[in-house]
Image (cartoon, rainbow, N blue to C red):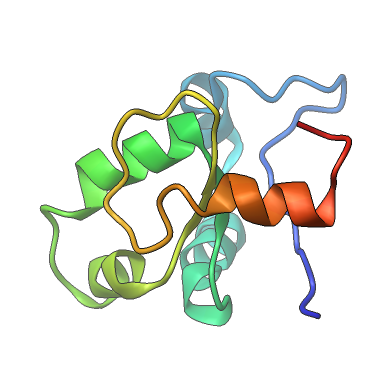
Length: 105
């Protein structure tokens, strides 16, 4: 079994939404380096629908070391409403979750 590591942008009062509107105002060089190193140091990210759609739209057209890693790394997407998925385990994820967590879906 592997570790699930969570990395989020969150305010002290618990706000997690619309991070693009506020999180960049408070970043410094250390924060940027940390966030850029994350995909280089992970086996596969677990993404929700919205994040997956943002990634799919923005990273597939980019090049360079970081973009290459973002495009190559296997991604696990959790969604009950995603209509299209460009990956390898489409339609199997619900079965996997049902096996692991039979009362959660």
